[in-house]
Length: 335
Figure 1 (cartoon, rainbow, N blue to C red):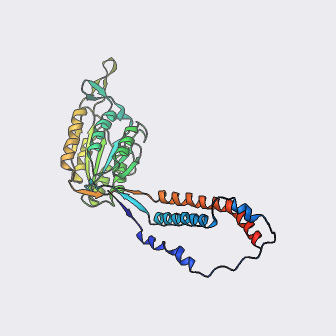
Figure 2 (figure 1 turned 30 degrees about the vertical axis):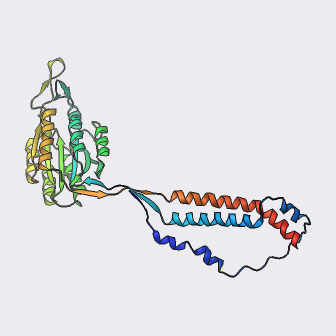
């Protein structure tokens, strides 16, 4: 913890007022047109000798100039060194928001929750653990939309995932478009650190590019894709004993091919426990780095001396206004 000046060379301006005093004096003013014979007596009742008043104003002006120069030098308070873990990995999460993600066939203990609710709960824990990674969020349905660009701000990504709603991106499933958008966002990231985690419960039935073609493009760009098929292994009983959920629409063959083409892995999540286990495995496959980046927080303090200089300048201006009539009367009495 220390105090420093960001621009110490600004202190060279301190002697400028002294140099100004070496300049030749201004021409004498014209004699006043009005004479006031009682100016000397009025000045005698002012209470402060003229010389002392001049020295006081000069000292206040010098202090104001000193504060102004110090403010220009940008005083700063530099805190203790803060170390942050940094991996350099860039991970995009692509979450399916099609209508089928509302199916309540995921078991969380004794309760049945929707597929999207399960994804939010487990993916949220995964996001919290990825300290030092840059995370992004893609939501897809009829089309794919970038909800959060790659960022170290994990809380923002977590909030945007929690606010996602079924149907926000449409009712269909554009897996290929989601992969294509992820490639576009990961293309400028360092090679070897580009990861996409794609969660879906259906088959590609929308979008402008097929999922296998998008996987080929991802392989060319060095994007590693982990695919997760969400949904119960078999239909569960719903209202009146009728079946609900199940994995009839899930295209596991395509998801496995996508993972294989990009040197990733395919996982099947049939309940919250298995989904949590999958994210634990991904943590092991894409481990967090122990590298650290250090920085020191800096607080700018120039506002304090600048405010002091401004206050003193106002004080000098007010005293000048009060002294000006006396000066005029003095001049008239000596004329």
